Amino acid sequence: MSEGTYSYPDEDDEKRVTDWKIEWLNDGKFPVLAPWFDFIKSLWWCADWGWTEFDGMDDGDPIRVYQVSTGGWSGNESLLSAMRSNWSCWMLSFYSMRRGGHYEFRVPRLPVPPVLGDGREHEHEHEQEKEFTRVDNLK
Image (cartoon, rainbow, N blue to C red; front, side, top):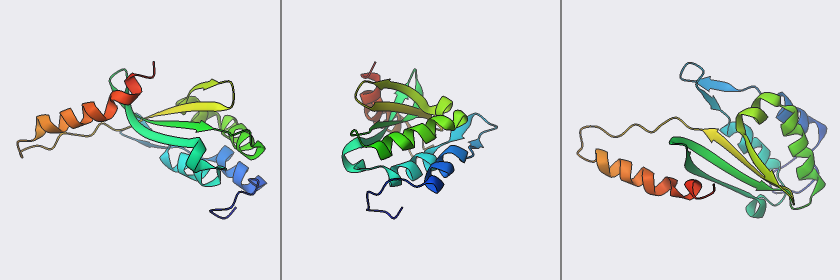
């Protein structure tokens, strides 16, 4: 499917979502799922309305949050079905769903190390706290 069009995802697109292999960082502690989500977003109908992503915190750990809504379009439902078929990616990212085709995924992020030696270590931590308050309010 070419970018900018809203044709139904084809079988090759769905197979790629289903067969996606996870890369791991830090001795297998951090799954790299952003490329999987980026690919799915490129196929998502009306992503400018039904796709939101932002950084946050979950129980003190940095995460990337993806909130997606199908908009009732069967192509998006088909992509979610392909996502569910990729058991590893789904289990590492799925957080919740609610009636109406709304899903939330949370993916661990590598902690951002503070910048050392420039006197701004604490300023950097404060910026992170402000950035992460949105997810803490979702519970």
